[in-house]
Length: 431
Image 1 (cartoon, helix red, strand yellow):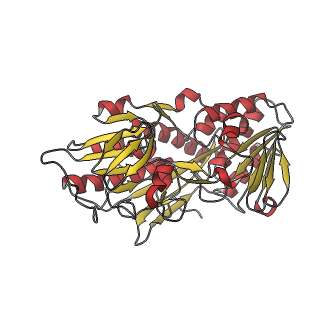
Image 2: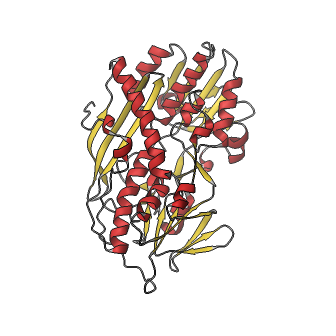
């Protein structure tokens, strides 16, 4: 597949914030508001989806916007692989909320644990009730700890990190990689679809290989255990691994893992596939199966599945018209679970909410996604698409992907796009 119909080089700092502004606002219930009071919009989750929506919904005034997050800042998963590869400082991943507050958004630090949908309130862990007229849930992912024997939150935090929510585990994994001796083995275990950022584990393998190579540990091996029989950008990654890291990366597909993982043994440092085969490593990065963040699964918002169903035109919950669900937590259709997707969805949903709550003009939604992956310094690739709201789901309209065998100049330009996107992205989301 190779059709660069909408090249990412068109993204600029000035233009990025103008993308995906439109959304239709049909089918939304009219809130019961006190006469003269500003409609109350509450957003749970200050990541790429939630923070973007809060910013864009607040622009133009007229709404009371409250943003709830349990953390005092956000640490981005995008570019966390660059940190693991020694190319980025950890501090560069941290983004505060001061500019959101300066934009008139009330930021509440607390953990949202329950919803009173009948009474229209979010309930925090300390019992605080925050009322809403419209609610947006953007909690990201949770992990299916019950899916793999021996892999627990405690093990992940201390011995075998997943590092798939950027933070202390990202630092732990980097420290383990720094301590690895030449000739040591690294295991990266990847779950089946769907999960956050489909190409993310494969970029991670690439940049771990870069770290090892750049520090003279070329006798080390990376065993890439996969629950799948194919993966995003596969031909591009495999070509890159052969070119830059010969003999260092071995991909073990579903044929040998059994399509998943049965057990993690932290003491023995092993991962057991559903096939029964056991794999040993000195450093293990185990990425578990995933599901929508807990708040997006309450009260049947995810039906009988792991992800919250939404309407493709407005991203309203299929089960509650006064709730919008964004980003990784949503079962919205063809868009991948990525920060770019969440940011794009948030802009469309913000326009739809303002149309509903303030009787502003509504526009059809435009959804976009691009995912850049760095294979080696100077060698980056991308995949993406434009999307449209279909009858049942968000559907792919125009896909594009880097080509195998592109010139060095093209790959360097793609790398520059990735850095420029991240800079524009964080400004667009958190100011």
